[in-house]
Length: 165
Image 1 (cartoon, rainbow, N blue to C red):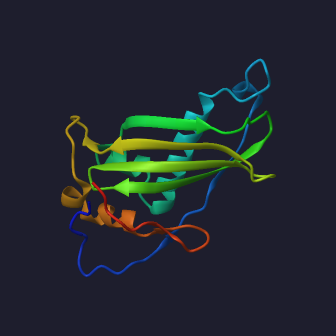
Image 2: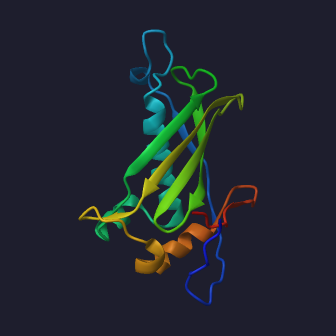
């Protein structure tokens, strides 16, 4: 279900090109079998999410200065193939749902050298003030809300254009 577009008018799309996040796996991230421990994928997702927000021009540091926090509501990860020490993974983070109060980010993790799919994941977040009360970026920070509608990937494809509940 779509929500009425409440962005600042006149709205002129100034697209932001989003680059994937790359990460070289470290020895300390592996288990006794030499495979990256499953819990590290969640850390990598956070790193990729922070990079995504930085590229949007709305960093976590900027959010905190504005007294906005964005806790994790849920995380899911489906592991497809193993990552080992010194492998470089490419993490494509995309906003797949956003309504001003919540956002859902999808992650596609692949091996840089082979392109093999390593994992597919999602995380859901909300926006709160420092008191822990939900806030609407659309209403309280329309200049920030607009940033969620200006994303595209390296191929020029839209990342987030639809507003969903």
